[in-house]
Image (cartoon, rainbow, N blue to C red):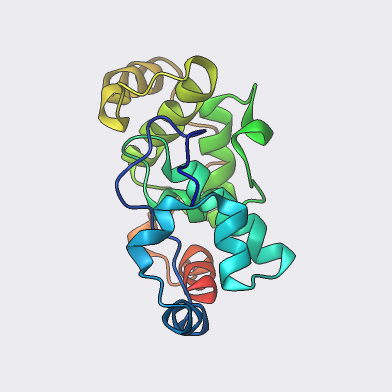
Length: 175
C-alpha cells in the first residue's frame, strides 16, 4: 500500500462514487471502501479494474477532493466540464471558470460555488491548504459589487431549472 503522499492536505475520506460493480469487486478482494485512501489513484484503478476513462475520473476525484473543503459535487462538476487534473486548471481565472460553469449548466449557481472556484485557483497558485471556500466570500462579494455578472449570464437559478440535471446525471452515471 502507498500513502497518497503527493496530496499533503489529504482528507480522511475521499468519495470516489463507486458503482455497484466496483463495490462488488472490492468485496471480492476483501478491501473496505475506506481503505482506498491508502492507495494511489492508479492503484485504486487497478484494484477496481477500471477502464482508461474511469481511471482518469478516479485520479481527478482524488486530486480535486484533496483540496480542503472541496467535496465530491465540486469534483464531479470539474470532471463534467472536461477537467481531470489541477495541472489543466493552472493559470485559469476563478471568475472565468465560474462564469463558464454557469453557462455549461445553463443556470446561475449558488454563490458559494464561485467561492469554491476562488479557493481552487488560490490553492493551485499557492498550495495553501489553510484556506477554505468560505474564506473567499468577502472577495467574491466585493468583486461582484464592483463588476457584476456578465450580460449573458443564465437568468434561471439552479433550483428552479428542470434541465439542471447535467451534473446530477453525470454523478449518477459514475456512481
